[in-house]
Image 1 (tube, one colour):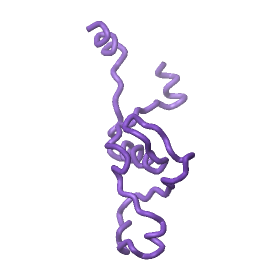
Image 2 (cartoon, helix red, strand yellow):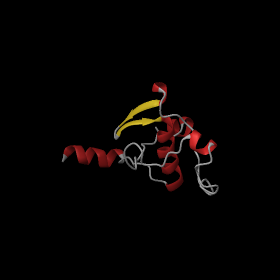
Image 3 (cartoon, one colour):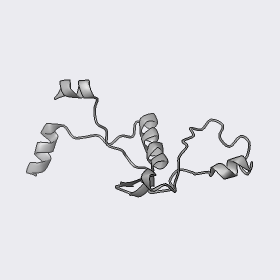
Image 4 (tube, helix red, strand yellow):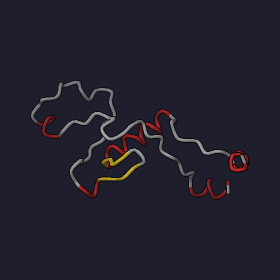
Length: 98
């Protein structure tokens, strides 16, 4: 199993920080109309996406999210190492027996 994980990469479980709109969203129109302060994006990670396209919507354990919001959750997990950790097979067996 370990060799297979090394070959394919380990599957991670996303640790969602909250429901839809947990991360701040700014419309492209607001940026183009200069309604956003000039230094608003300084030292921030910006993910560009759409909230309105049905093909960019996903169902998650915390409710519906856009693709951009889902990417923000994954980015947060990667940067802060917040992934949900799986129990070892032995710990899982003990848990099931209890």
